[in-house]
Length: 418
Image (cartoon, rainbow, N blue to C red; front, side, top):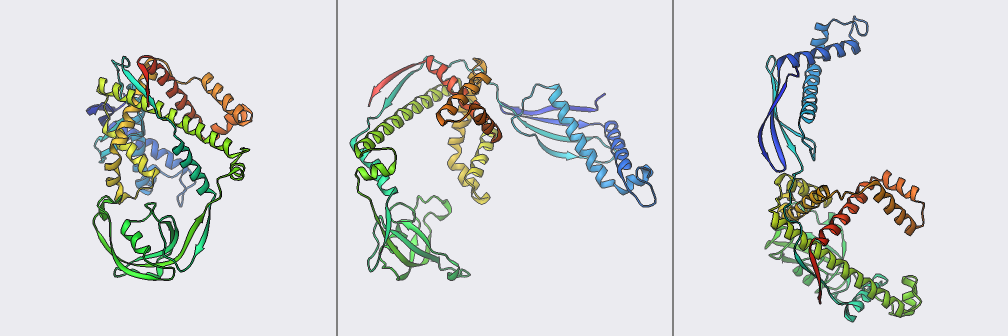
């Protein structure tokens, strides 16, 4: 007799709710074990260790024993559910609505998130186009210009107003009651790169170093923070310093400084080759994305809310979103999270159905390849990946490659001249 019973109260493709009951007899047996354990370890005045009477132990450790009984009952219930069902949770269970009264059964609700079991009826037969845009001379020159800017230096200017492209040091203080202007620290920004709202940049460009002004600035209607859109603030702007960027000449010397290039021509060729490779990768990713979209539509693949919600919270933690801003953040990223959930469900379903998951041999081969490219021993690289918990990422990456290779063979991909 387990003394633990449960029944399903709600479920969808990605979650299941169970109502669980632990009967009184089981709770009493659990309590007796807890009392004996506390009696064995307890040191109470007037008694040798382990020899205090159980009634005394019960009175002395009433709160601790009750908490122990509850924790044991919850854990044993969960173990029973896992043993008696075929559920494969994707996260720790959520325990809700606990009722734990003396002399009555323990009841609670457990919410279990599970990975949906998809049966994809259609995984191929799609006509897809792969378009790789041509790399132009202008694109190469733009990349070279960025390399110049990375090697540029900043030189102070005096007696001039800043312009787009200049680096400025400014202090912007909101003139509101309770705000101490002295507590506002200066900060640097490059004008014309969207690092500040347009009206603020306009006010800065009207000043010379050492000058200050009080003005009202308006946040644009499409500002990233919804609460600021269309709002105005009265601020004090102090311009401390203006610098212009001095760029190195685009010549053989710069090429040699940037790496193993003997001339500007060699650097230019490498830049073009890198841009071409990037364009090819982007085209491949677009084909894969379109393929998954078609499969998702053909099979009506869902984006379970519980999985979307969990992924949004993971995004929020990654971007360090403040709790007060999470709902706004979630609204902006919900479509991204839904697409990612569908993607993972499709890939996981195909990997399982076609036995395409990465094997130990696949992982060993990939580690050996990476080690050879880095000039290290495969065993050392494997140990490093294992220590840093990166083997799972490698396994996931290999599985995705195998799944996409299989999926693309089931459809027709034609090259589209860009």
